[in-house]
Length: 65
Length: 248
Image (cartoon, rainbow over all chains, first blue to last red; front, side, top):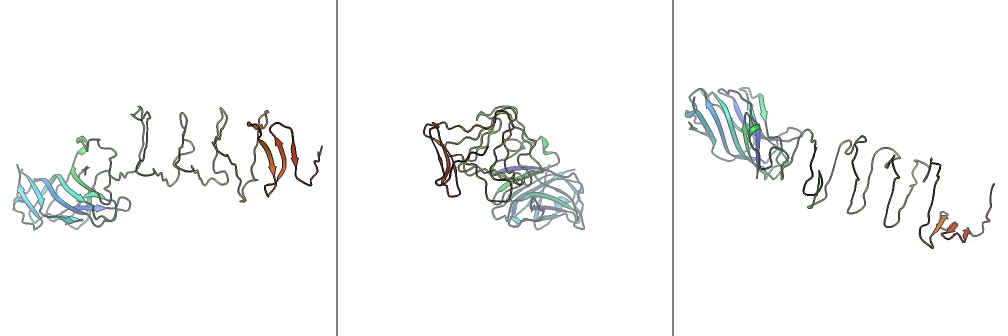
């Protein structure tokens, strides 16, 4: 299985902003269907101090160090 | 400020979206996802996209190589991945992955185990080269001999008008070699004037019969001999019913 690396923008995200994992066609940029993502994890610096209270049904926030 | 880890709890079809809640503000430092393209409709780039409140994309990043349809990959995202190690082979071309990019420049300075600087062997299937314009540019050059070995015929086709293949060697002779018959065939198309052999050299043209018993023949449209010269020079045959006429 391939291990791939990508750069990532250094930005601060606020309420309502979206983080999207998606699959696009290398040539056209169109979405590619049939791709499944799992084991998603995002490490983030919690600026608001409220992230541990997140109750999103699709995400679980675990306070880190 | 604390670092938090956001973890999705289930498999999800792409695009998978995590929306920051009412009071959340954070700066992503890293991200990870396992992309499973077993059911993918085609090769794809594993993207991490940031969108603003109104849904506009303001960042989209992805690895330099695409994942083939049917492939799976663990993908990590970090602000500065350049110092990280990607696979055992480094961050370049990878096996079992569709490598897609703007260009590829191969420049070797050493000799590999094959004895070559660049050695391409496709054991599982034929190697195919496809280019929209030109694969070997007219200004390219080769140092040393160029050998083309084909399982069957080697076919060179260009769109350069009637002159579809040109072999040029200013320093020495151009040799066409064959273990069997060597045929120069001019088709019935409208280009050119049949088969032309032209020598601009003072030494002219030599047709050598190198085997005893060989003949040099000129035939008619039915393949019947008009003029035959034997290798030993002892005889010639004029087409039956035709006289030998010397026009001086």
